[in-house]
Amino acid sequence: MARVITAELDGVFGDTRPAWSAFLAHAAQRFDAIAPLDVAALSEDRVEAARQLDAWAASGVGDWRSQLTRFAEDHLPVYVRPDARVMAAARSLVAAGVELRVQSDAPQELVDVVAAHLGLGRLARSCEGGIQTPSGELPPDYVRTPAELDALVGDS
Image 1 (cartoon, one colour):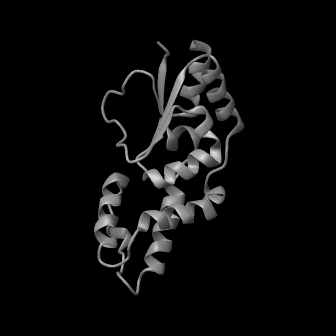
Image 2 (image 1 turned 90 degrees about the horizontal axis):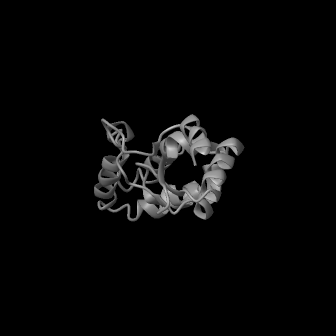
């Protein structure tokens, strides 16, 4: 059975929070005439914030998630850049037979665009969004930083 490593997208491969914040500002401005969005009132927890946005969108805005996809496709390279060292470590682990899974609390639509942008779709077994970051004791082989990923290269 292959060793499974779960890596936190935002901590290891690229922080999506600046792109998320920019999208929220964009959405608030774009849809203000339909339904005002108080970005400051949204939860810091992006899983909960997505639920809040679903409720906001139901008031006439429509599918905010497709807007997020479009925004990310257009603007993501400004916010998230591939790190050659991190990607080399991920490729080494996968070449050694490690099953890489990537997760984030960001909405799936953002995760999908980031995964495509970074090439994680080819490397990772899965890239899942809307997953709460574990609290307390971390599961075995859960990676939160590039340094932790590098350390695993020698272990594989």
